[in-house]
Each structure stands twice: as C-alpha cells, then as structure tokens.
Length: 455
Image (cartoon, rainbow, N blue to C red; front, side, top):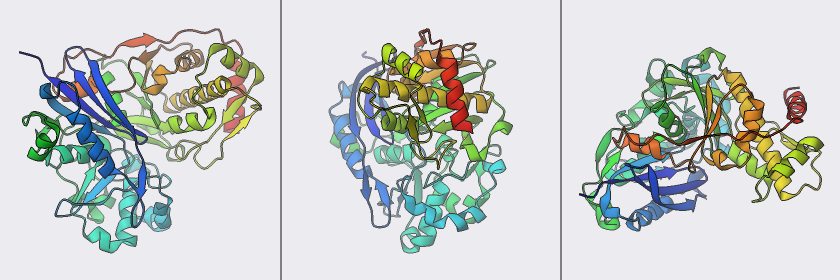
C-alpha cells in the first residue's frame, strides 16, 4: 500500500505556503506559495483571510498525490486572532500592524496583568492580542457584541478545514497578554473582560480535530477521511522540531527566522527577561515557558538590503573594512523599537554590499539577543537565515566558542509537521555546521556597532 503524505499549511505574515511532505523521508514533494496582503476593513486593517482561503483550497486541489494526503497541519504567525459570530461568519481579522490599536494605550495599560505574571511585554501597535480585543470592545462595541468565538490564527485555518474549533497554547502564550505561562491559565485581564469565554477549549497542537469538512473534500478532491491537526504558532514549530530530536539535558538555542527573527533559549532563566527589551516567555507545544527575544529581522533585512542581491565574501570583507553598518531599528518591535534606523559609511554601496551590511546587522542583533537571554549550547538556525550564504559564518565568528549549525530547507517546518501528524520517528532535521571565514576585522566592527547601538 502506498504510504500516506502530510500537507503543511504555513501562513506567515508576509507569505503563505502549502507543502506536501513525505513523512518517511521528510522530503517536500511540492510547494505552493503566495504573497500575503492586508485589506482595509470597516474599522481597521485586516488580514486578507478570504483571499488566503481561496488560494488554500486551490493549492490543495492542485497538490500532487492529493489522494494520499492523510493529515493537514496548520502553522501560522502569532499576534493574530480571527473573530467569528454565532453564524460562523468572520467579523474581523485584525492586522497587528495597524496603529489604530494604540488609541487605547492609556486605558489598556491600567488593566493588563503585570509583566511578571504574563512575561508578555507591552508592545506597539496591536502586537498584544489583548490590546486588539480591548480596542474593539471599547471603540467598536456594536461589532464586538456580535463576537461569539475568537480563533487563534493556526486554529482558524484548522477550523476552516475541519469545522471544529479549538485553542492552543503556543499562540495563546505568544506575547498576547492573555496567558499566564507558569499557571497555564488565562490572565486576570482575559477573565475580567470575558475574553476567556470567547476562546474554544484548549487542545494540544498534535490533537486531531477531525476530518476535513464535506465541503472542503468536495472542493479539493482530498480524501474525505483526511484529518486536520490543531496546529501551532510558527516560531514554536521551528523550536519543536529541535526540541523533539535533541538531548533534553543539554541547553540549546534556536533562531527561527522569517518576517520576525526569534531567539528561543532552551533551559534559560526567565528572570533575565526584560519587558523594555521586547523579551518574553514563549510557550512551547507542551505548555512549558521558553525564554525568548526577537526583532523583525526579515523586515529589517529587506529595508537595509534594498535589493534582491545576495551577500558575498568580497562584499562582506569590504563593508567590514569600511565600517559600513546599519544601526537599529528599521521596523517596529524588538529591543530598540521606537528608534529610527540609519546607515553609516554606506554611500554608493553595491547591491551585494548592502546585502552584506544587512547580514552583519541581523547577525549582530542575534548575538546581542543571545547574550541578553543568557542562552547556552548549540545555536541552531532555521528558516530563511539558514539559506543566507554568509549569515551562519558571521554568527559563528561572533560566537567562536559555540557550535552554530544551519537547518536544511527553507524553514518549512517539515519535521514539526511530521511530529504533529503522529510520525514521531520521522527523520530529524539535517544540520550543517556554519562554514568558517577569516574575519579578522570583525571584532573591531562589532565593538563600534555595539558602542553606537548601546550608547
């Protein structure tokens, strides 16, 4: 009998993709991708969930060997919840980058739980889901009164496919202000405002919610018995695939990359977390808190690089010698949110030189976050940064006493998808040690960058 396949649905902030995976080999048979957009709703900017939904159904219908797909695993970005009424119609899908949520900052800050309880920092825009809900409840009471269900983003896609509603802790615990990671329960704010009652029962990321709906089966041609897993927050999927394949007694550090670059420190001390530096306790797939720091590395890289050029060794060496550098920050979020990013000694750079400056910037930021967290052990890079030809080498040079390794693939989280689909013996992610480079002038470059950044 032909063995079953898995479909991974990965809805990021910038891009979405569907990957068909062979769980026996971990190979990606084929992927469909699209760029995401936001739309203007009646009261705020919103995620374009209807366009993604149509694309998703088309991608599943056109998937190779679709008759062999037995499990669908949804993965999606954090700080997002889709609000649904009692007739199962979408009322709102707030985009966390809309500045409208800051109109309620003064009132909201008086009611949110302490950082020491939630380990959820007070973030700009709508990066706390609690602020999104508070804004709608206060500024759009008629709209909010229609809300029957709040579905975290991975579980929204699971519901769209299966018709079954659930919640899950990796998204609840993603700087939402809604979750107490030590107590593993809703925050005082969520209970006082009645929001806890809007969220469906909590399930494990690996729990099967049910088969696809009859409508989805008819539209896509998938086997009607194809099962839908509850799903997981994207950075936690990166973390999970290492958590389930490494020695649990040894600390390690994961750098998950995409629009956000997220540093997650296994076994690190939560007492090192600082609210003013955008540090938080993530919650892993098993409910345990994980010391975390992050910045919008993908967004900032694009802002600095400015082109599609790739970095190369001669360009990198040239910008280090010239001390052409980027100083934070070029996007919202992260330890330097609120600062205006700038380039210095960067006139007339070529495309590959700008990409090299961007690579150096992201590596220096990652090293700084690792230091702030007190993160120990091997440094494991996942996602687009693992495909950058020089990032691993630069970070390895910045961390000469540590092992820095790159995950194969493009961050599709295939190992996590296999695990969540019940294939616990699926092949572990292939890790490649970062290549060494002679970067003798890097320490002086780093010292200047740190002085200018931290002064």
